[in-house]
Image: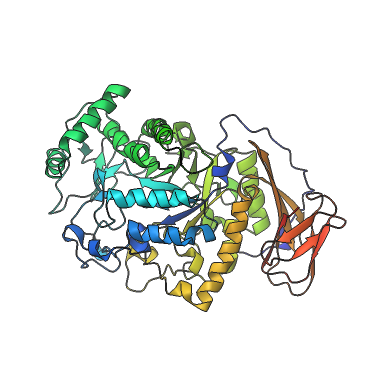
Length: 555
C-alpha cells in the first residue's frame, strides 16, 4: 500500500462537501457499516475429529485439497470464547454448509480435489457431514446470536457439484452441458456452462421438472422423503411458482432462514445467474426471516432487514481511481444487481485500490458511497479472499498498515480468516487457489508476535464497531500532518462521529486537529492508546500516540 503522498493531498474544509439527501432505497446504515468475518469452515477450527473422514473422504488430495477437519462445533467454540466479539465483528460469513459431493475429481496439475470449500452442492436440504449436523448448525447460530453476532451463509444457485464415482449426474432437465461460457456477452456469461467440472443449473427456465431420482432415493434412505415432498407442495401452493429448478433452489435455500434465523446471504457467482432469480430469493428470504422472528421472541436484539451481498467477480467501486458505475457490463447488457434484491456487492477491486494514496482512496470512496453510483448501497472491502489470486500483500509484509486501511475505509469491511494474525497466503507446494486456503494457525495466535498483531486488529475493529460512522458516515478531511479525518453519521436514527489520525512513525507528543467535530472542552479518549484529552481550540494533545489515534467522546 502506498504511503500518504503530500502532493496528492487537498484539504477539504469540514462540512464543505455537499450533503445529498438519502434516497428511499438506502440500505440500513448498520449493514453499510458492517464488519463481516469470512471463514472457510473446513479450515477454521476442528471441534469434532470424529467427522473428519465422513462419507469415505480421505486425506489423499493434492496439497490443501482434502478436508482438513474444521467444522461447526469448532466454529461454535470460538464464538463462545469471544474471538469475534474481541475483533469487533458484526457478522460471521461461513462458506456453504450444505451437503457437497462425496467424491473427488482430478483437476489437472492441481491434483485430486474434494469439496472441502463447500461450493460443489449435492443436496441443498442437508448439512455436509464433514461439517456436522443440523443440530450443530442450530447451536452455532444460537451461540452467535447470543453473542450479538449475525450469521451470513454463502449460497449457490448457479451450479451443482461435479459428477464423481460417488455422485451421479443431475438430469438434463435440471442442468445444461453446453455451451461453455466465453464471457463475451450476457448469454456467454449466464446461459452457459461455467466449468466443465460443474453442472450448470438451468436458472433461465420456467418449465416444471421432476425431482432427480438420486435425490428422492437419498431422502427415502434418510427417512425424510414424505416430509420433504410435503414441504415442497406447501411452498409451491403458497407462491404459485412453477416447479422449475430455480424455484426448488429458492425453497431449499430459504428453509435455512425460516428454520434457523439466518440473517443474510452472500451469493456466489452472482453474475452467472439470471438476475431475476436473485430478486425472488431476496423476497422469499425476507418472508422466511419474518416467520422465524415471529416464533423467536428471544432473538438477537436490534432487528435488521435480511441482508444479501453478491460476488460479482471483477467488479468494484473504482477502476484506475475512477468510478465504474453500479451496473455490471456484460458487453451487450448492463445489470445493476441492486435492482435484483442485492443490498450490495463485494468491492472486488479493493486490493488494487490500495495502490492509491490513502487520502485519495478514502475521498474517492466517500464520493461513490455518499453521492455517486453506489450512494446509499452496501459494499464490502477486503484484503484477501478464498479465490482472489490478486489478494493484497500475500506474504503479509504490510500487515499493520493494511489493517488500518481496511478497517478505517468507508464502506463495509470483510476480514478473511487469519488476516488478524497475518496468516500467509503463500503456501509452498500448493497449486492454484489452495495457497489462499490454509488452516488457521491457532498456535500462532498465542505467540507474542501473534498477540501483538491480533491486538492491533482488535483495537481497530472494536472502535469501528462502536462507531458506524466509520463505515457509513461522511468523510471529512481535517489535516495532513498527521493525516486526520472525521466521519460523521446522522441517518435513520443513528447519530455518530469520530476522528482518526494516522500517526504511524510519530514519536513523542502530538497535536491532533478536531475542528468543530467535537464542542470545545469535550473529553475525548484515544481508543488505541487509552489516553484522555480535552478539546481546546479545536485540537487535542496526545502524549504517547500509537500507530493511529482513534478519538471518541466520553461525555
